[in-house]
Length: 247
Image (cartoon, rainbow, N blue to C red; front, top):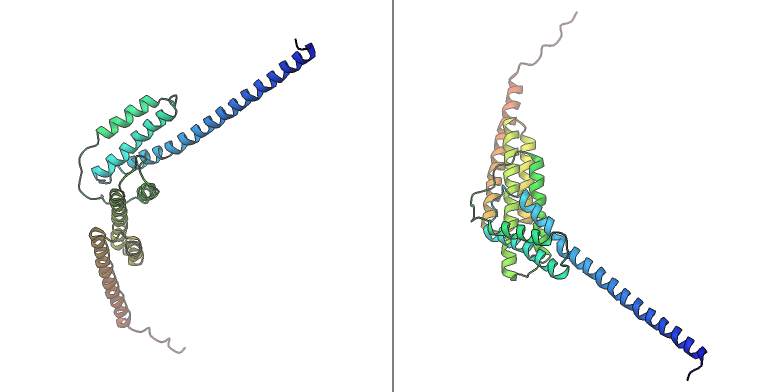
């Protein structure tokens, strides 16, 4: 039989080993939970971006393929989150709402971007498109997508961006021309032309926007030159002031 001192030492050693094993399990569990939270945050981060952008772009005719691709991605992200973290707040309700929005997406609306007169509205639309462009450029939907399909949707977004710019700058140029401010009217058209030329995309649709803007700018330039020449002739035709008579 072992001495009492040895029994006490073995008991203490057993407790120490048990504590070390328990501490190891706790650390592993904490590490697992930290990785779980990081994964959920990464997956969920794109959801408000997509939903806000689609809301802001409600007046812009986005194709059904683009809208359903984005709506499906929101649903798939919630489904993945539930697989990783089943106790995520309101996850089942969020999934039902995302599925309902996906199912309720209608057909292609067609048409064009309406005229944009308010600069604040213009900035909201541009930011929304830019967020979606960045989303697709970083990889797009979580479920994966054929490269060809992703590039096609990305091109559609860039065309809508070009159209939004055209609808704003052309409207502003027309307003300023009516007010007689040809200089600032030309600046709007020059900004539009420069952006379309440098950032495209290089498609038939964008080339038509470019040619339209060039035509408008050419008309402003010609009219501006004619007006300036008319003003100069009017000044030349005025009689010279009489010299003061000697006192």
